[in-house]
Each structure stands twice: as structure tokens, then as C-alpha cells.
Length: 107
Length: 115
Image (cartoon, rainbow over all chains, first blue to last red; front, side):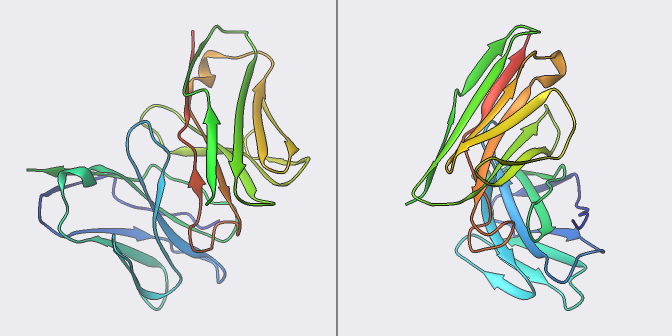
């Protein structure tokens, strides 16, 4: 399992783009990079997953450089409801969650 | 569509009492099932996972145990609860391990307070 490192917290304002970077220096060839969002007293919710280059869905974009040692989750035009903890995971089978990044969006 | 059910939502138990939390998945077959625990202000800790009926892998030695009596049923148990067992317990499932289109799907969780 690849260990991931991400900032403990980030602050933003409504309407801004937020980029959360995660490092996974010892990522293995078979590992996928997955991001989850968790609100208080709820289970994490899948946001996006990728293997390399760029992935985009209706919620976010995921940028993965060629060496795959890091990844960046991009949330366009955040709103107050995007305040949550965001987890970055790198793995193939069983995933390990770290402490995540607490994103606080203010008016 | 696939759904995951977890109950109860909240539970207050005295120290030394037994515990049984149940998780069931609908709309899929042979899922990988997981139990996670989240202590206050901390990340999710993987406790157990199962790739099939009767197959349980433990990630953290403790006074908890898990069982999978049916394909889509996963049970977390304890014979005697400790104060340190308090936390938010989450069940999750996936078909393809950590990869796949949807990754993990989590239940709504059980908030356990041991008093």
C-alpha cells in the first residue's frame, strides 16, 4: 500500500477553484489513485479515480503527472457545501485512509 | 442498483458489554466487504476485510472480530467492549478491490459510545 501525504487543512472562499495535492512517492505499478469526500457523521463518498494523466467528471478533475508520485484534486468554483474532509488514496486492493485534508469554504 | 445498509445508526453500550453491528449489501454478488473505524478527529482505520463467505482478514489486533455468514452480510462483534472501542464504525463494499469505476461505497455508519 502506498503511503499518501496531503495537507491537514485548507481554506477557500466560495467561487474559487481549490487544488489539493497529494504525494504518493512509493506508488506501485498497479495502484490507482482515488479521492473521497467525507462530511461529519457520514461515510466517505467516492469523488474521482485515475491512473495517469487527467480525469474529469461532473464534480472534479484529477491531475496525475507522468511519474505518478503525486496527484492533484481540483474542485472548480467551490461552494459552502464543499466544506468537508478530502482523502487521497493510492492502492490496488485494500485501501488505507489517512487523516485527509479538511477543506473549509467561507462566504 | 446497489445499496448498503448498516445499523444501528447510534449505540451507547456499557464497558464490558457485547457488541454486534450488521452490514448488508443489496444488488450485487460476491462483493469485497470492509469494516473501518474512525475515532474522533482522526482518519479511517481498516479493521477487517473479507473477499468471500467465511474469509476474514484482520488488519489490527484487538478485542473485535468479524464474520461473514452470507455473501452480502458482514458482522462486527465484540464479547466485551472497552472504552477505547468508541468511535464511528463504517462498513464498505467494492467489487474490484480498491480500483474500479466507483471505488468503495460506504454505509451511513454507526456511532458507538462506550460508557
